[in-house]
Image (cartoon, rainbow, N blue to C red; front, side, top):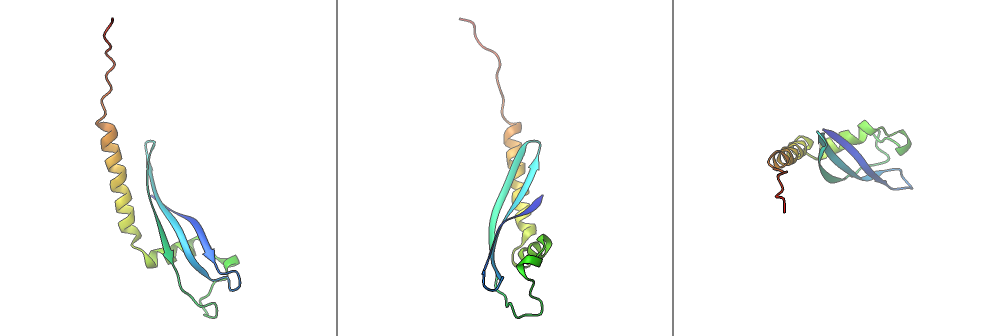
Amino acid sequence: MRLKLEKIKRHADSDLVFEVRFNVIAKEGGLIANKRGKVTLEGDPDSPDFIPFSELKEEDVKAWIRAEVDVDAIEAEVQQILEDKKSKVGSIVISSSLSKI
């Protein structure tokens, strides 16, 4: 399971990040399941905790996402989607017998 950052929007004048788009992805045996999300953030560039955009690390942004969204619940949903896909693939039967004309 992977939490991937897809897009980060910021105010150019203050470097304040105000939106993050993300994707939770699971892969197994050639199957892929995912769920996208968006987090809207508020902050203050004058705060002592403010991190300038140029100093931002991926883990900082992921921590913000986890603080706003139940990522564990999304991961569970994605895992269920993957399990559903696996069960559908396992139930497909291909017949190779052809009648001769």
